Image 1 (spheres, rainbow, N blue to C red):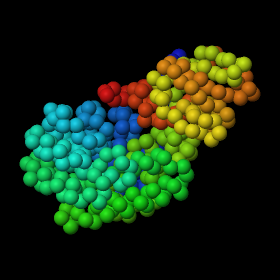
Image 2: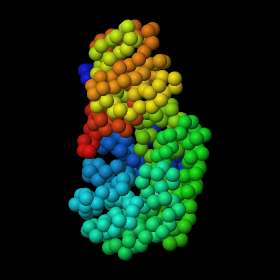
Image 3: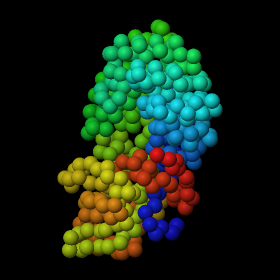
Length: 364
């Protein structure tokens, strides 16, 4: 494979193993599996999900739903409905089973007035993340939203949805499990209040840390994680995965070496890796880790080698002297991303280890 500029590499074997692992969890726990496709954003990768029986998906925008509607019929837009996109909402609802998310009485009231074709509604519940959603015990607001849905000609209530995004702030499995216990119980509290009136309602639960670590999903009907398909350094730090489960790296040319500073300069900057960062061990803030190259792809991170600075096209790798001597200008190095979702969104295209180029969604 000829690489002469930053290229996003995907290890199909690792990716498929991640998919199978989550599908098996859902099967074991008798939950439906609606993976969030905002991470990989690829019709080609989507086919790997179909091979394990997945028939419904989540996406992060209406335009992404349009992209995936070429091959998927049951799509949830897991983002608060943007009422200004009413034409696209109706276009999709006419063609597929479209599911939308709402979290306010204002939005559902406006939506009821503009929707011309049947679609289903999930009400978003805030179980502690405090980004969006109706707080889990604010039953008056939930009641008001459900009343509008019940009286609307083209809307039907499907269930409740939550995202425990604050699990990304956890360090270690015990913190994740503690947070999962609180969030799940709050979510089940909402289900128990409304199940008598809506016996077919489902509760959809999704975030990669809890679904990768927890085992107790009693009462949950559907799992909706996304990042697990590729994982990243953040997930390793949380405890969601090991390095051998990270299915993507950014391949970058070495363009300069500064021995006196113990630095490698790569063609691979913030427009490729994004500016996502984290505090890593005793290294301070990092933007990626240098991965060991192997015959099969990549292995463990190289000790004391990390991306510590990014500008638009430049990446600066700090590395110890003994390792630095192994590198030269013109080599290709592999970078483990801090956040695979933003890396993939930035690069907008995968290359497999056999050189096949996989297209991804290119909208915004």
